[in-house]
Length: 346
Length: 290
Image 1 (cartoon, rainbow over the protein chains, first blue to last red):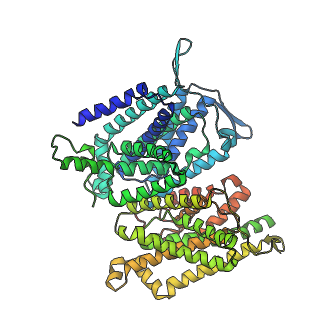
Image 2: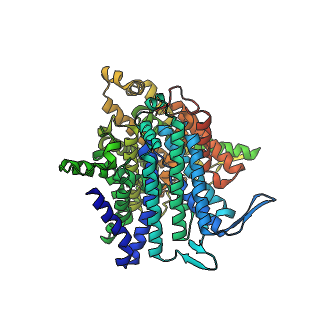
Image 3: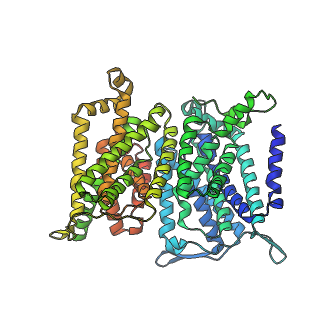
């Protein structure tokens, strides 16, 4: 049953551009997909290790800026007579470097921030994102600050001078985002079902106990931030080469909050949670807009919805649905990944 | 030298309002264990109330200030009763997420009500600055500093001298024992959140006429308040007071001598640096949480 549903969902996603001719809908789905990838990466930290990273947008932005800068090239003066210049490089290399730099920053933040936990970790991650935003805003020579990086090239794959495919049109970008999303999902699935993933859940549930049975706390937390930041960087790189303009606004706190809302509403610590939450919050603004509701009120309803979900459905939509599914007596249906890895909330 | 004196004076004056923000936030965290993301929105609320009463309703500036603070206290009490009361005992992440939801809702309500255009607020002070030898300071800022200092002293007196303050301190030290001794914890929580919110609204009402009021003004205020509280150690009132002044000095000197673009970044770099060296903050005696 679950298998059939999964296959049907995949078939729907794969065939969508074939029968959906509205480019506007495809655009919305591409942006939603990019945010779902980012939300999945946040879920690895928030849901599995239990660390609330409120600076997650920093990794997204670092991926976006790195990938754009490598593919556009730059020429900056680090010191008055020390110039660093880079000629434009292919986009795939930029994306790769974007992912690596984001993951590297995640590693560093993981190393330094996991000395501090709880409220302190939240504040360190927020501060980190804010510092990166201010650098993007003020280092005009590199980032052009509020003037933004324009004319970012699109991804081209193939062998130069022989065959090249440019990801210029919406259906192509749709499949690109879908591919990355599936890869990210599989990577996270493998990770959380591995020894490392079980160690992370053990840390979330009881850190002292986990450490006492010999789990290297810092190592697994740093691994989680490393992978999580890398995936967020990939989402940022996809965003940069799809939208083709990047400004310091990509570091806005509100994007982190969007990711957090997606994860918490969908169900943190479940593989499907960020996807359900992401679809909900990616498509909801469009539905609300269709009814002529102004954007401020949309955001107000986000906030209220978040309060309601945290208060009344603390585990999120996916675990609640899984529980309901089980209660229907369908023994064949596994209670999703959720219930097996997460004890019921008090 | 004159420049350094001027920067120091500016920092001292800015530090007063920063301390107000920090004390409010640290009280709420210390007593309620709530990371209050709505703090900056209360700050913005204070500024907008000044706009409402002074510019739209046209009432007296000083009366408007009192009204703005009282309304901030009221809004704080309302938030506590509506959202936090039923979450008492929930883990810190849950309340944090609820407060983030409340923050988004409040900020966008502000934007919806007042539009995105920045509002300036007229103050009754002469525009010519007061010149003291090599340095000068505007009358408005001097007034801000005087009121902020008075409020800080009043808060200290409330915490250390009054019966309510004694109950607050008891709750801070040991909620269970305080409850056993007959302290009404629910009432203390409401009072704490209302007091903290009132202080934030006061900071906003004081600085609104100096700068302008705009819907996202609360974001930076929240982040700076976090920086101040972390500097001083979560839950420490003297720490928050000192932290407010330290952050103001860092920002003024950083903006004056390093780069004005990174003025607001000073606090964040300071947070990261301090947490690396001394994770409990500079002045905390209690162990850290989490």
